[in-house]
Length: 174
Image 1: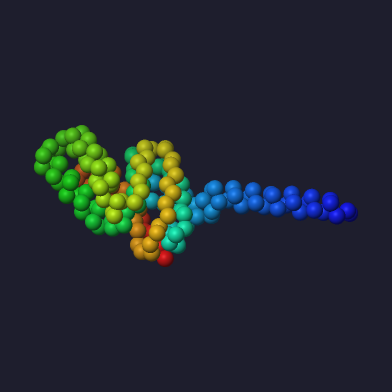
Image 2 (image 1 turned 90 degrees about the vertical axis):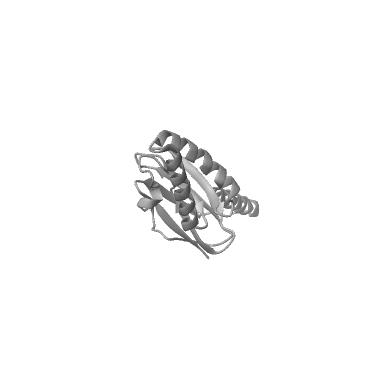
């Protein structure tokens, strides 16, 4: 075997290795978690909660709503503060609109989007998914601590949100 033939083989192998590694990084670098949203739980495929990740690593969540109603995938820093804030808003809207769920839901959705923009200390990422929809959420947890995935969807369950039925999952970041 001549020297140029061996060099050509080595070059091809290096190129294939680099291309494969680049593809691996584009797919989330191995930190990809498939999560199903259903009534009323987050189900981590190929594992269980709490999810353990490292600070500074990019995490990709591939989420799919396999349930029969709309769900939220919301990453928050303090589940209790978020849930309390949402319950207070729902109580306020019920006092204002009585049992008119359409008006309550409409104003709640507007408020919910607004408060998420205002309170970046609590709300880190969010996707709404209708039944059958899929989405990807990519996030890098900068600091160690406990974070939460919460579904704060309202609907026929007023004054409760889906989190009240157990649609909460824990993420431990070290």
